[in-house]
Length: 306
Image (cartoon, rainbow, N blue to C red; front, side):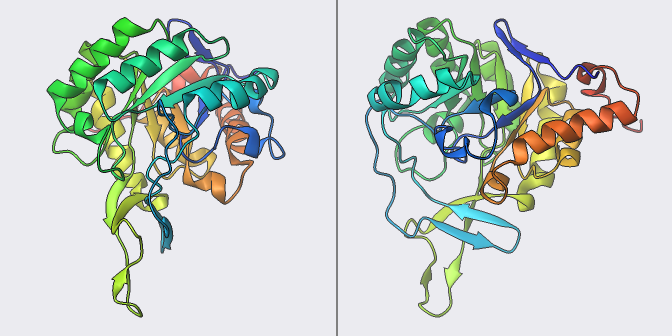
């Protein structure tokens, strides 16, 4: 039997490297009719803020020929409601839960990290400093390596939970930011968040999204994500989690091959809500067929010509 387990940080060992991406998997409850949460490596909650957030005006989602453009604006129920109404369900489902957090200020992040540190059933925090669809908040930290490092360092002191920092592709040098947050104490890095895009309606002559611009996800961004994961994984000593257009086991294997230690499935959850566990089965079948005993032997085994 193939060993699919991966260790992302002290205290964060996953039974397999397949995670579900924040913003595409709600709080897990919505997907329980389609898969068993404890069969996933981990599930990542919808981004959580200190207080409830309404998000942007509608329309907030539009399909493109090879992906999805969204400007949800990080709508969420807030930390108190999550702990009261959602976390008990996830504990009962024995899910490995990573909570994605964001704030408008550094103090928001620190208060959230401190608050969640006390709660049973939270395996790690994913720090969102990369959402392009809000006017104030994380992205201001994610596009400045010094600010990103200072924020991660402060959160590191506020919590003993493993930290995953989610990076934006909408920067000049993602490797430089990855190095800074790794040095500041992040246990892992996840990338990429969505790429800023736009769609227009020729009938109305207006933007398709009320927010005008949004974040592009899905198959269209996979080559960009794969390239960035490859570049970052070569340059940092901590594990990298690949995100971007993953819809099949082969997609996941490609990210693992270039150096990702785990992957997150995002947009494709909306097309096939059981896809994450199907990818787990696909990984095991591929490795068995190729005589690979452990996923660790496959990760980062890409052969690049000199």
